Image (cartoon, rainbow, N blue to C red; front, side):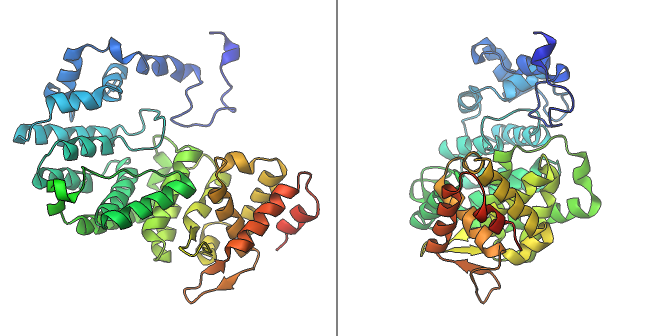
Length: 377
């Protein structure tokens, strides 16, 4: 490939997704061969023989680790409920937590959770599943922070009744395209019902808070191995809002820890709204404008939204999902000093008010009065 196919250093963000550089392009294609090119014996060695705690990761090893066929291989080689297999599964968890930024995922769904899915759906007992949960709780690798967020959400959902859990999953999916699968096939047909999921949810939430505060205080995130994409950061923030939305101080701490994961400050500012506004059962919206003041200048957010509206970028930034757009419309409405403040200090916005803002954005193709109004304090 000629030089014209490579962007300059200034054009490409310094991110684990930034493969269009000469330094990365060869490694990228070594990581992406057909899964049929991987011999069966390599899968067996990776899953059953290699000491993954001591091995040095390279392109060949990561090709196996992130092969789309690995799940079926785990089922084949580690499907039995034996002590040896539990040890190997714990080693796999440590490996993925250590190498979490070495692979560009098609969607932000931590690969670690695939291991839990395999274990829970193969009938492993509750003790084995808890050993895997504890392995994650004890892990201090940088990637553990993100995985712990997912596991906190997953355990929280698992602790709910089937009907309530499904309702919460559907809400996240409808508005933010966050898909959280259930583990196993339901408590009535699995040993998973023996696990105190609520206790584990609380442990993971405490762990997330601990890591977040440690990172902010010690500035550890300055040496992150990579960044999150726009899409991935939005999903993570949505989950944090769901977990800590009722405790503003905690929500502020965990969101601040994500600042260094963003490609730039603008991305962080815009996507923080995903965690700071929630839709209620009565179709209204609640915005936490107080927490926003600790994270960014509200005027900066309003200017950014105005720019997206003017450039017809809002559709793209929200994945063309109307519910996401309504959340940003409600948040804009609240930040401009409108809406009713409730007893918790949050601003209540009706569905009609959010819809009016959104329709106003759509009607103004060539920005004028409305866009000028939008950026006023």
